[in-house]
Length: 169
Image (cartoon, rainbow, N blue to C red; front, side):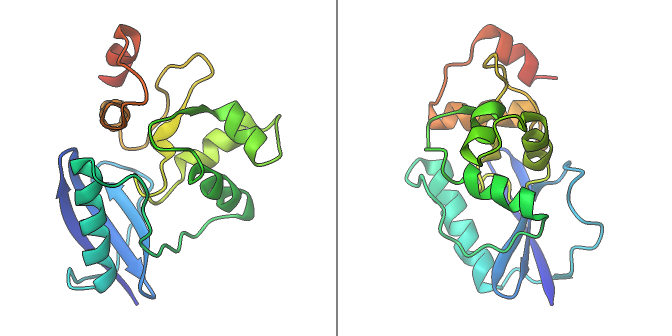
């Protein structure tokens, strides 16, 4: 059975989805990558309580890693990319090219970008830590403004004027 609930964060409302006592989705309301059918509403699922506590700790600055049990469905390639995202240290950014190298496919930066955009676990699996080869904030399914705010929270980069303009689009 699949369940869902809503959680309000400093960046807006997240939809959390669980299956088999694992978190399988965390999307901002406007993300188009969320499934059409979220399951049954039930905010009492233990994994939601754990995820909400960890998200609150993250936004307060007291958590850098998430250990809530997750179960993300995707292709083998997507799974490799999502696993590599978890290795990007808090407060750092990688380019899509660096992520491609990390999964052993240095010429697959575009494919890595596409897999990154399909990440169903926003924030938990830190796809917001990936930037363009020129350092610009590119492609975050939760929106450029949120990406800029997440990176500022982690203090991985100062908001340069070009990034601030791009993040408002």
